[in-house]
Length: 141
Image 1 (cartoon, rainbow, N blue to C red):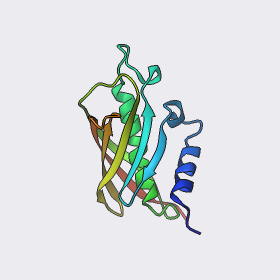
Image 2: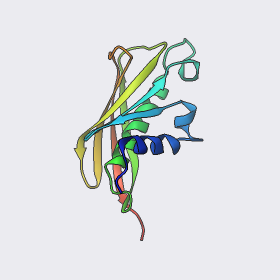
Image 3: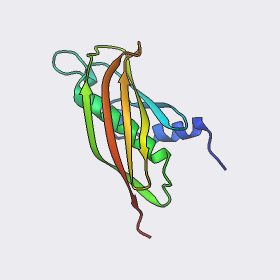
Image 4: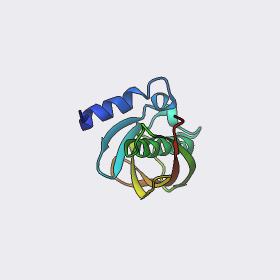
C-alpha cells in the first residue's frame, strides 16, 4: 500500500518529536518529485543576541529538509542516509514570521546526493542559499 503525501508528511513530522527539529519547531509541509519543503518560525528561540535569525538555526533547517529529501527518495530498506557536508551563504536578515526551506536535488546518485536548499522569507526573498552532500550507506544484513 502506497502512502499519501499527507501520511508521509505526518510521519516525517512525528519522527521529529524530542529532536532538534521539534526544538526549532521545524515542520515539513510539502514535497514533490524532486524537492521537499519545510518551514520554521522566526522568533526568540532562533535569534542571535541582536534579534535576527541565527545562521546556525538556518543551517539546521537546511540540513533537516535536505536530509529528509535524501531519505524520501532513497530505499531505506537497503541504505541509511547521513549528511557529510553542508555550506551556507546568508544573504538577508529576518526578524519575524516564517522562513521556508526548499531542498532540490542537483545530483541523485546511488551513493552520494547533492542538494541545493533555498531558504526564503514569507515574501519569497532569498535569505540563505545552502548546499548539502549526503551519503547512502548499505545497511548491515
